[in-house]
Length: 142
Length: 109
Image (cartoon, rainbow over all chains, first blue to last red; front, side):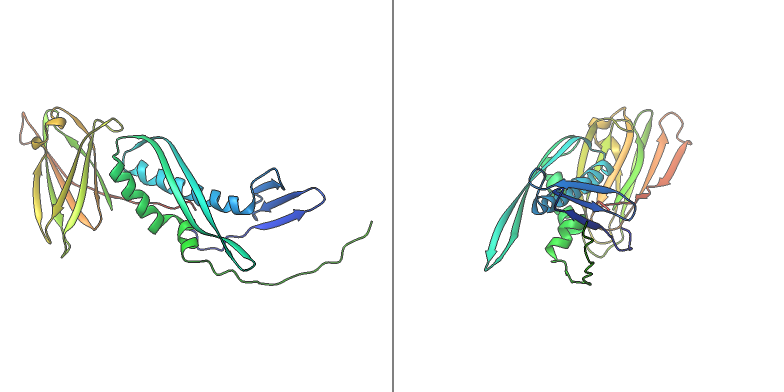
């Protein structure tokens, strides 16, 4: 993995009801409020996508023919006072493949979630989220 | 680690030498495929004693008789494996090599 910081910029435009996430390389994702996934669902999507990519790499290296990898993620909400968060995520893998046994896949998935899936590891270790700075710009009145 | 190599029982015979350089037991899984990307013919699960060197003749595996293809050896700890492929008609024709380890690039980013 690259040791450079991973940077994204989020722009929320309430009038248009959209959120845009953009990297410095101009790769972007646009989310329509209400219609698209919520940020919490996106977090689960990120975890599932990372796990699927890692599993695909691991199985391919082991000579497995893979037709599809489906991962169903279920986040268990926890309420602590005024705070709501996902306390536990249950992952169900459905893999369509040839040249591999269930036991082998289970071993690889376990290893993936413990050692290689960056998002799973980050979530398990609880990422340190800190406020860097706040910039307030004056709005131009039309 | 994963070691990758080629075996041939098709007019040739393959003998493997597996060396556990660790001071602990090592579990390994050996997979033999038909050709380079064909079906999986056999999977063997072996356990080597600390510092054990084991010779394994692929003639012992019926399913790879008259077949040749990719061989993958997966081990939880570092392992050395060499293959000796001998022509059955002319035993002076011998190929001998050490299986290279594949670099595992994992994770999503």
